[in-house]
Image (cartoon, rainbow over all chains, first blue to last red; front, side):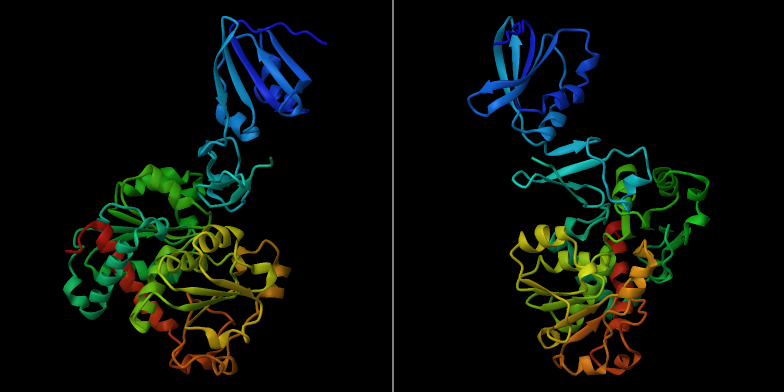
Length: 142
Length: 308
């Protein structure tokens, strides 16, 4: 069994679908980090069988919308003095800005570069978002 | 109160607000001279980034008939867009001159963007293949005036349902009134967008069917709303040529329809309605043009708050 040091003050990004940890790692730009980060692949999980997880030994701001959009099943554990002080369960955000780009070539966002791409959640179940400008539907792959 | 509001999507107005506009328009139809000075001293800017003489003239005639004045341009070449100015800057500049703006733009969502930057009411005069709410007000006023109601109707929409923004707005508007049913007639390639089906029709349990064959449904319709296959919406001319004459309404097809069915068309038509149909009393598309001006007069008066 591989042993990875615990986190003193920081976060543990847990319940990442096995194989997707590296994508979350890159999404959060953790390759550039100047603090301890551990990416654990194929850890055992009661819930998922196998899972990936990321341990970050540093207090950092997370873009929860970005993570929620990537995988709403991810859990964030906040660690203070080696103890879990809070758990954040992600969900699909109601509104996302500048994360999804509208793919409709007729959308105003395709020619006015200063506008934020903005999407509104239509349906939690079907994971569908709607461009607030042109109503184009964007489906998040689960 | 509609004073100061933008009209981007007619669904953002309550049905009471829409009814208010239609009621005022009806009064204007009956007594136009009562309203010929209510917008005196006010300026309407018509910003047409995509040419549309018909709609622009309708807005301009509406403002002039209310006693107001007009400024604007009729193509992007005549605006600073051709020099690379952003849409938001153009709108902020024009809002300094005008009390109300009617904007047509080839890009979808352009009026929504404009509404973020200015306080003067913006009227969406058509944004790409997306929406055309004042055409819908026109259609509603026409239908209400001729049929006496906007409820309990079987409405057939025929032609280009994919890019036909008038159709999208029409379906959204009539879905809010009880008892309306839709028959969506189009070739496979020009079917109604999925979001209209799921988010408007299915979500609100509105009865609808999709078909490619107009003959089979003619007898069921109270309204037949014909649309043109729009050349300007196609990236590929071959597709346009193949699809442009998918439906041609002629005397034979009219013979299959109910005696009180009415034919509407947002115009301009190309081949989709034969000229022989014009003589039929049920052909109401030119009457619809006139109602369009009154619908826009009522809308402008409401948004400016000069309707009293």
